[in-house]
Amino acid sequence: MNNEHLHVKVEEGVGTLRLIKANEYNFPGTNYRLDSTQAVIDLVLSKGKKDNTVIFYDENIPEIQIILDDSIMDRPQDKAFYPFRYSDLFSEWAKLFDTPVNQKQFIDFLKRRDVVECPEAETLLVTTQRLRLAQQIIGEYSYDDNNNITCMFKTKTGEDIAKLPSVFTIHVPIFNKSDNVMDIEVEMELTIPKTENEKPLFMLSCPKLPRYKKQAVAYEINVLQKRLPGFLIIPGALKN
Image 1 (cartoon, one colour):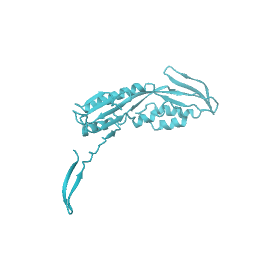
Image 2: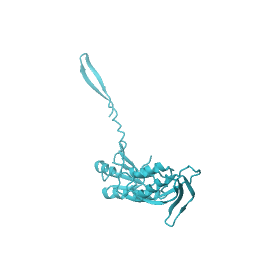
Image 3: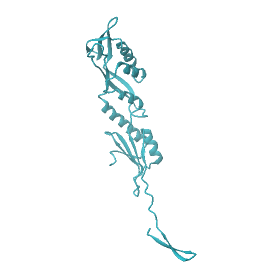
C-alpha cells in the first residue's frame, strides 16, 4: 500500500493527515524442540497437514526434522526438531562406558539395577563385593571356556577366586520414552592392580553401540510411518 493523504476538517481550517502503512509484523516462525518420537507424532497430528508437512530423518546424526507447513512462503516456516535422546535407563549405562570406575562406584551402580534390566546384576554384585575383601590380586586374570574373567586374590583368611562375566546383556530402550526394549551386549574389563594395596577398576564398553543405535532409529521411523499414514516421511535433513 502506497502512502496516502487524508483531508480532515480542523478548527483552523483544512489540514492534511498523512497515513503511512506500517510494515506487517515479520513473524519469525516457531521452532519446536521435542524429546521423543511420541512428541513428534502428537505435534504433527495437532499442527501438521498431510499435504504440506514434511518429515525428515537422518540416521547418522541421528535426528528428526519437520517442516509443519511447506506452503508458507511469506514468512519463516514453523519447524520442529527431535535429536534422538537416550532413555534415562540407557543413559545410566552409557555414562559408565569407557570410563574406569572403582569397586564402590560399581557396587552402587549395580544396586540400582533390577533383574529384568540386567539378569547378571546379582551375580556381578555378589562377586564384586567379595573382591572388596582382596588384599592382593594374584597373577594375571584368565578367561575360562565360558568367557568368564577368573581372578585369584588373597584375603586376611587365605586365598579366594572370583569369576565375572566378560560379556553380559542388558535389556533397555535406547531412546527416550520408546517401547523398543533392546538386547544390548555390554563388555567388561578389569584393570590389574600395579601395587599390593591397589584395587582393580571396572570398565564397561559397548562396541556394538553404533549398530544398536541404527536399529533403534529404524524402529522409531517405522513407528512414525505407522502412526502418521499419509504424511511425507523421507531420509534427509533441512539445510542450515
